Image (cartoon, rainbow, N blue to C red; front, side):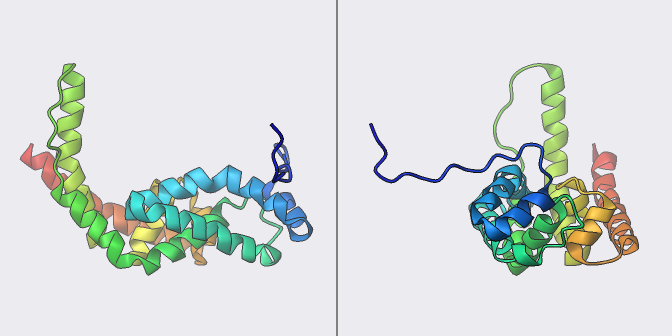
Length: 197
């Protein structure tokens, strides 16, 4: 059956770096679909970790809309757009600060309620995770927004300190300080769990 509404083919740029794709998208907007395909899942996962799955769809979609709108201003000296996109997503998440804190509060209250049957390691892992999850959520909630942003970009989005600095628009040393401070606070919070176990 013939499609009555033909769609233009999506560009394929497997070996082309992000900067080249974005440069092409300035004249041929359909090229931005390559950036979407490369990063949407990761940005969505990051937003879900910060805000929960309900808000992740909106934040991820808006991240790419903003990126598309700002593609003419993208600094083409950066071969990868990953940090740029995470920066946009982090700024959008900041607008949802109350939702993020509510998400962590809910995780903090939600100790696992399902029974796990199986191997001893699975049970041990599950018990350990269930003990840590509420404390981790409370610890993340207690961090300042700046410290939490830096930590989540490094730990959850797997950005390097340099990429996180670019995403946040701060010096790399500032990212290092924020991540170290956040980790120290979380270690103290999680240390109490180890003593209780």
